[in-house]
Length: 295
Length: 342
Image (cartoon, helix red, strand yellow):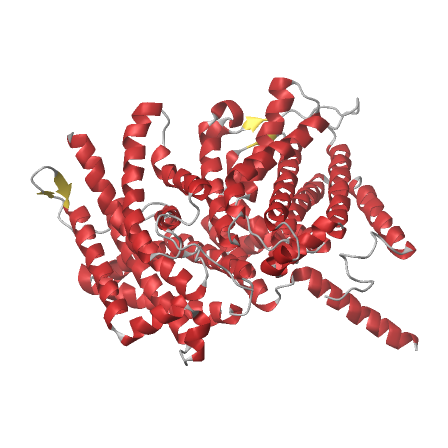
């Protein structure tokens, strides 16, 4: 029972990070119809920049965290301004390939600067566990969960109550209509990239705290793909819910399925089986809208 | 694109005598030259030829049909491992084994790609991405087939009684298959199906209304594309006589995408130029890196970074790839010649 709860809680917490990063992916997709294949690399570089800031300047975690978010903003603006904006008229497939290219560049930078091997993240959270009454959970996990929920709430409020949030929602629901009432599309796109990159950066710092820093961290970011397919590529609610589902599934996959089948390493791959299965059974995902196209 | 004699979708294959002679001379020249190259250069040429074949397959999908696969290296892997298994453990002769390897790769590709072909292109991108990760993991697990992390050795059997152990002889075999692949590629594009590819790429909705079965068209494109990948993978295995799973990692899939983008989307010359580019550039980069840096660890990230940069720069500034650059150069050259003649 304790094992079960352990896997479950762990899954929910890691899953909440997926949810948040998945939100970033859905955001860009809704605003610009582009699936950002560099999302995992954005997450990874967020973790590296945060650690580098701590090591180089000796700052404590919170200011370093803020500094790295500023960096993420700059990276997103550079990507949007110098790459994506030049491709606004290009076919969607080319844009997807460009994001793959960006991902490769970011990965090369990380390997070039920090090497391909794992670096432990600075100890930020105390190693003592927190007793939740039924199970003891590491502090990193608890704080990750709290921060994730905080940031998701923040973005939720932003989209619901601010004017810019409204404009972004309008653009997502119809790009043409938004443009015709004078929404500056380029700025909305830029903002979508910035928010998405910052979200990924937060995710990167948190996962780096949990798993240590390696270039393989980008793999965490990539697991949001199964999450968004499960939830529906265009659904914010879907992304949030299914991120958690994927996290839980992955943990159970690593735990129970291994005992059941004797196959190793099923955990990290399990979400991708789900992705393929969902495409077979219900391609619009749990919450996605069925698309009706007109000529 | 209007209907004119230069439109590849309508004009006959090798329409003029000049073209026929040119194509035959080119193939013969490559075949003859390959027999006199040293080992290192022959290795490069063989790699280029095999990657050109894989590139043609991916180009049919990406360039001609407007879909994307981020798993073509994994499909090559399926081809390489299954042909090796068929030859060594089942005793199938090499030629049928290579064709079967292509079929198996196509079937595996279908399992992953089929559902997403009903949807927008981005879904195939995602599904193929999942395929890359799942297949690579399956390669790692299936020691009986792939040898796991250690890789497996592959015998290179004789074909029709002719030994291909000599690498110059094997090259001729690879060249023959690639030329067949090229002819099939061009012919498919001239068929009704090939024109459907273009219709689905350019205006999927309009194509459907005009009676093109969009789903079937995508399926044929994807199947054909993965078949090419499987055959190329099989050749790759027989050529190296050893296959390691690392040869089919995500990075390689991205390199294949880079190949078609750099070479030129939707053109045969693009696949060939792109293959030459992605085989030769890393060699060149390695030399340059070794010259300016003594730190061996610098090679991998520089290689990677340059690839990423090239993908991005080409997509922004020369989305039609080297094939277009080449044509511009030729036209410019012919123009100068013409001007000189007057």
